[in-house]
Length: 149
Image 1 (cartoon, helix red, strand yellow):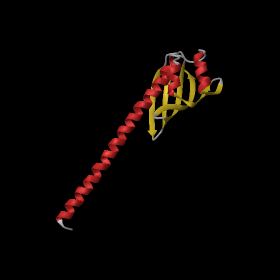
Image 2 (cartoon, one colour):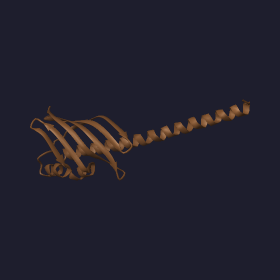
Image 3 (cartoon, one colour):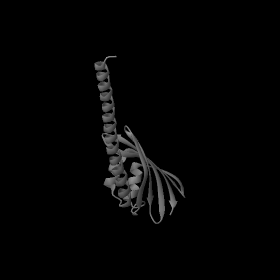
Image 4 (cartoon, one colour):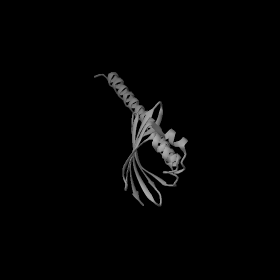
């Protein structure tokens, strides 16, 4: 192989490597941005429940939202409308809790997160599923186990 061909081959290889690195960097930037947006949705959900802020909860929850809560009284399955009505009637929520995000993972238009919401009375261990719908991240499912603190 001539020196000129080797030179061209090495330049093409470097170009391919650089393009791959740029793609990885772009994908990483998109992932970082998604994780930031997902974190904001989770924080909005936590603050919305703690402060009984219906607007924050309505924005954080997808229309098809469901929560399955495992409590000392058994399993409760609530849709978005029922959950928000319980908040509105002050039967749930209204207690300041500490939010701990254990992990978040996202791929394409779906994400999962494991969080803890701790108060003096109870700890909520939430396993959240989120989807990106109409360019907005929202919680579509929450399986939570509530245990005394």
